[in-house]
Amino acid sequence: MILFDSPMQTEKIAIIGFVIIIVATLAFFFFSQEAAEKVEEGDCVDINYIGKYANGTVFDSSYANPDEKANGTPIKVYVTKNNTATSPEGYEEYSAGMIEGFIDGILGLEEGKEATIGPIPPEKAYGNKIKIGDTFSTQQIMMSVTNPTNSLDITVEVTNYTSEYINLRWVNLEDFDKFTMPEGILNNLNSADQNDWVTLVPPYHIWENSTEISEIKQDSVTVMTTPTKTENLTDVIRPIQYSSITTFIFPDATTVDYDNDTITITNNPEIGKSYTYSIDYYGSEIITNITVRSIDVANDTINISASYVGYSDSLEYSDINRTISFDREYAVNRNFTDIPTYYATILFGQDLDEEGLSIHTLAGETLYFDVVVEKLYKTSES
Image 1 (cartoon, helix red, strand yellow):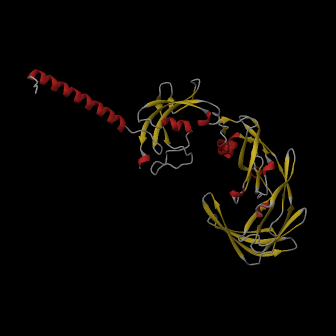
Image 2: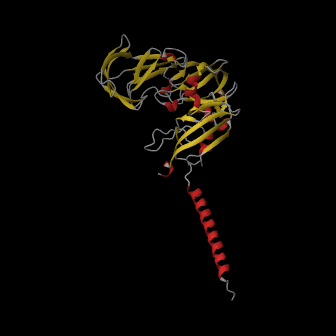
């Protein structure tokens, strides 16, 4: 057995101690690195940013002075790729809706750290800029107000596009079988009169899957409706309005006659009988009680009283049409022109997103962001 002498043993102990210190220091360093909290989906973050085009030009910033990165007002971001997601309780001021490339770029960042995100291609930023000839599907042109599920899904082609307006054309008409005709068709969003924004069509929507395309022309489409019921049309009272005509369909009190050209609806409700229907008005339920007061056959009108519970709680009296007639065929314009881009963004933004298209001012651009995570809240862990 060989024994170390005292000097050698002291030196050996010193080396071992030094190694232990190095190992402990490295362990602490790596532990600290692993323990640092990083941005994950579901977190909330305060972020300062500078947005740049690929050529380095700044297009937006949270700083009052981007060159100095000074006087920043951080944006409050709920980190999610679901644009409609609701932020966690207590963090209501944090918003979803950031572009996918931005969210991808901040994932994994630590609080207080600066980073440059990019290049973010258009597909993960604001989409590819639309151009003439692009097509997309939408339910925002032929719309059902009382039952949005009956809005007609049509394919439209971009026929013109400027920074101010977009023109669309209804295409792929051969794909249609029988469908439920919506109540309204997009008309003129430039009009100062909101009644001109949507054209109300005859009440073909009463009969589900009863309308079909009968003729296709260069600039118009003719549709024809064949009633599938001539009595017992509905279980509840339903309002009908188009053009200047206002009336109701009464349960067990409305009949229909039709020939090759015309559909006629006749109402014969019981005098003194009351009916109730409700609508959802911006999240509030409005209940309307309708009472039949009298029927004037000579003038073809029905006098009713209406009280609105949950809205104005008032009582009103009016005459409605007892009989209405309308053509079985209806011509729909295929061209929807001069739609302001502001409204187009609201109406068709999501539809365009699904096709990777956009009318956003940054559409088609490759982007970069210089970012700083000013504050990280680990709401993903709560």
